[in-house]
Length: 270
Image 1 (tube, rainbow, N blue to C red):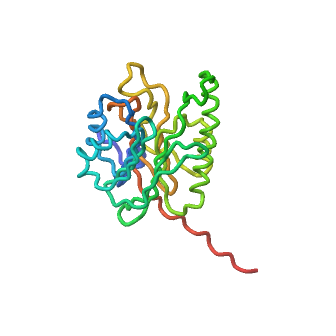
Image 2: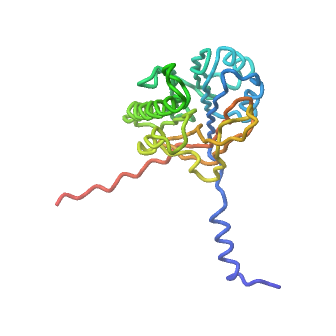
Image 3: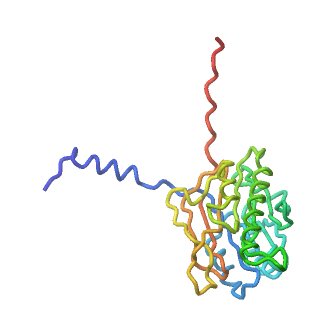
């Protein structure tokens, strides 16, 4: 039976409207690689399989840093690593030119983050690799778990506010990613949203969800605490990669620079 063209026109228009566009040109990944992991090769394997343009690593130990350079040094010739024994190591790796890498304290605590400028096809991007205070970190021997969680929630709120303050005058695009140790309802995450940072998992074709506990746990992931956010950027195809050798799953996203906002028309003098 021949279907009239006019009858098929609405369906054709609907298909055209939902047809995905070309993939965005760059990829970023946030990955807490677990300082005590005995499955380092599996974590490196995830990175090697995906090869994101920009990579934020947390809990980077000297051993992991050396293994990364041996296995992935050719793919990532531009790095800023600040490895530490324990949970405080942090690093940024890029397949593109990188400058001004530095480690800084996430005030009001000394727990470090890293930042750098990465050049993507002629444009500079500020990359911030953060690791906010873990919920169960004990500050005093007399603190029980409830005390620790309350204190650390308050500390993350202050850390989030300081990060917002640090980049509030940044005029270029900013990619903020890492292990935030709280869900989107947390105070630091709300501060980022208020400051204009978009969440990658709110973009089209997102397949996100819980990131902790990850591949090394027998328990299913229950909390989304690893995040990728951006200002002056657009995101698509965000996803949680349910593999690796850490107690966190990595998060990956495609991104591009947001188009410039048109200036409002000039007002004529009365």
